[in-house]
Amino acid sequence: MSEAGSEHKRRASLAPRRATPRLAAGRARALGLPTRGTTNANRLRRVDRWIQATQVPRLRDAARPLVVDLGYGSSAVTTLELAERLAPEVPGLEVVGLEIDPARVAAVADDRDPPRVDFRVGGFELAGLSPVLVRAFNVLRQYDEASAARAWETMCAALGPGGVLVEGTCDEWGRRATWVALDADGPLTLTLAARVADLDRPSDLAERLPKALIHHNVPGRPVHALLQALDAAWAAAAGLSTFGPRQRWTAAVQALADDGWPLVGSTRRWRHGELTVRWSAVAPA
Ligand SMILES: C[S@@+](CC[C@H](N)C(=O)[O-])C[C@H]1O[C@@H](n2cnc3c(N)ncnc32)[C@H](O)[C@@H]1O
Image (tube, rainbow, N blue to C red; front, side, top):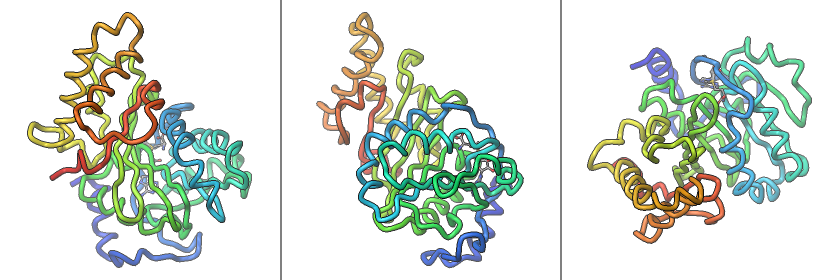
């Protein structure tokens, strides 16, 4: 088990399992451990576009449209981008970046502009906040699978009513990404998103699967079957390459839908190099 994993396990075992502590912001003990802070401008554009396309009604309907960006890393850039992307569509939007590393919170003091954008120390308990949306990107990759599962539980228990957690992973420049959307009852969907021009085959995304799935991408497991089916459909659509890789991706995703894979959301998302599938189709057995 990694250092972060064993420490989180130790701390999690001290905390009540269902009833996550709901201490006032600033008093909550931050759950988790600091990890590498790597981030980059525009790295999270794919998940942000998906959030814009699918989560704005949820935020608009909320009495307090509060978004948490958990584990923003060594600079404020992706939190500020999330706020800039959502603010025009969500009146009264508040975005709070949480970091478990106090030095990283101190380092972004000049970027604070509360209540529009703020930065605080916090961990999986979400610092006592009750957000409508949590984006946690490239945070759980550095924990072991069991710790990541407990982190899901802790974050989902802290969500506000009707809230959603979007937890995922991407490469350094955001060209390959995958994420899981969860609500208080558990995982809902898995999304794959890529700059499809860079893909040899869709299963190239396997290395970016969330912690909950990455060790289950082996023959006989559902997520492996999904990636294999997508590779086969991608190969069968090779003739469409002359019209561009997005056309080829769209045709491959359509083939999966035709084969009965429970795809979710607007087919327009496919043109962005995306695919969203019901969690039940990929959940580890
Ligand atoms: C790789 S950076 C990701 C930065 C940014 N989200 C991105 O995707 O570019 C991971 C950050 O998560 C922070 N982190 C790790 N565990 C955390 C936790 N339990 N709560 C809050 N932040 C955490 C680390 O300190 C680190 O700064």
